[in-house]
Length: 327
Image (cartoon, rainbow, N blue to C red; front, side, top):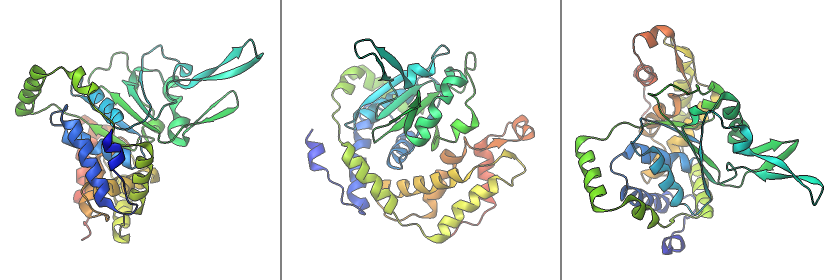
């Protein structure tokens, strides 16, 4: 636990913060082989105070990475497995009659934690998914007319399988928009898979996880988020972000464009990427790195483009290709 005591983050200074994040990445990669983009984007979302949706086939370390990230932060962690029979009260909590007091008392559900991992979010019906709207957007839950605030920091990391559709429910657009980023996780390379096998042959994964110690306290995380907000971004780069999002609303390949919430998210993630690279100012490459994870789940393609086999990433590349990148 000495890491917690030795790490301090001077406000408005990105250097010490990026060093602390490098330590977190180093601890994660002691267990996780490869998946550098996923880890970097997860950390950016954490610093930018946003919720994250991770999409990938089973077995590519989505859940494991989220669990490790939570363990490296000295906060409460809860994991909820979404299933077709899950009810909103199973997630949020419910009022229970206290016979001795003669009154109802609120019993908090598992969502009342700091980092909440929702496995296979698209397995639950729309009613249960909709129960997350308020808690993700306003960081509070209203039950029986009573409002219960979430303790800061609060972050939802959800996973979903893009291949198996039996017994799954499509996430509503309004809920997708509440995720700051959607991270797409692919298969490892051949070399990485060899490393995975060698690592599993040498040690037991449960032992590696149990040996992890937190390196970030909640206060350090809240301070880090202040550093992110103070990162400088030039007005021409702000205009570039607005232009990207605006173009998604006027592209013939896009049926539904991104909202202003996407513009805000892109600016926050660009600032986080800048800090992860040790800078206290945003450059165009930070914005370009943020485009796909921030926008890919917020736009819908026309049926014609979908029939052609195009993806949202393909269309976003076309949109960026038409724009002049400020220098």
